[in-house]
Length: 301
Ligand code: EPU
Image (cartoon, rainbow, N blue to C red; front, side, top):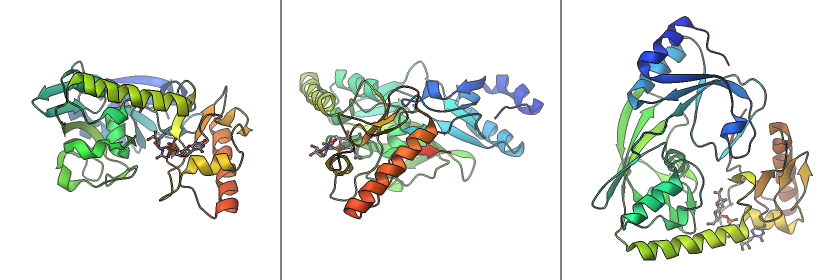
C-alpha cells in the first residue's frame, strides 16, 4: 500500500520517521517471503501515537514488523502500511541486576551483552533469532528458558487507547508462546531483572545451547523457526517426522530434513507454497493422530 496522503507525507520529517516506498518484506523476514509496501521506520517511540492517528484518520491500515523471524507474509503488493522501529544507538542499560532494553535490540546480542556484565538466566534464548520486542510479544522460549520469567515492566504502545503505557509484570500474562498483549499492541522497551552469574558459567551454558540447536535445527537455512506449536504433552516435530514427511515440499517450501517442525524456503518459495505445505502437513497429522496443530508462526494475509 502506498501512502499518498500529503498530510501524512509532510508530517513524517517532523516525527523523525523515514518512509521506504515499496519496501520488499521478503528482504526483511527470515523466511525470505513477503510482498511490497510502504515501510515507515520510526526513530522516536513518542512518534507512534501521532503516526498511528494520522494513518487511522486517512483510512490506511497498518501492521508492525519487528525482526521478521516468526512471520509468513503474503506475496504481491500488500494492503497495509508497515511500521518498524529503528534500533537506537544505545540499546541496553544496566544498573545492578536491572536491565533496560529497547524492543528493537537483537535478542542474541542482548543475551551476550548481559553475560559480559555477569548477568545470566537467558542462556537458552541465545540462538532464538529476532528482536527483544518480538520475543516479548510471543514469550519466546528455548531449552527451559522463557523471556517472560525475567520481565519486570514493559513500555508499549497500546492499540486500544492509541497511547503509550507502562505495564508491570503482574499486569501481563506470559504463557507458552503466548502473552496477554493485544494484536495491535507494540512493544517499545522492557525492564528485566536478571540473576548474577559469572561470565564463564553463562558462556558454557550458551555453548551447550548453541551445540544442541546446531545439531537439531536447520540454523543455516531460511525458516521462521517452528511452524506449529507443540500440543500439550506432545511434539509437533516428532509427529511430522514419524509420518515420513521430512523433505516433502510444495514448490520450494520444504519440510526440513533436520527438524520436521521447521519448514524452510529452499529457493524461491512463495507464501502460497508455504501455506499449502502447512495445510497439507496439518491434514496428515490430523488424519494420523486426531490432533489439530496450531500455527506458531504468525501469518499475515
Ligand atoms: N523430534 C523428532 N524428529 C524431528 C524433530 C524432533 O523425532 O524432526 C523429536 C526429538 O528427538 C525430541 C522431540 O521430538 O525427542 C522434541 O524435539 P526438540 O527437542 O527439537 O524440541 P521441539 O519441541 O521440537 C521446542 C521449541 C523450539 C525450541 C526447542 C528447544 C516449540 C514449537 N518448539 O522444539 O522452539 O528451540 O524446543 O528448546 O515449542 C520455535 O519456537 O520456533 C522453536 C524452534
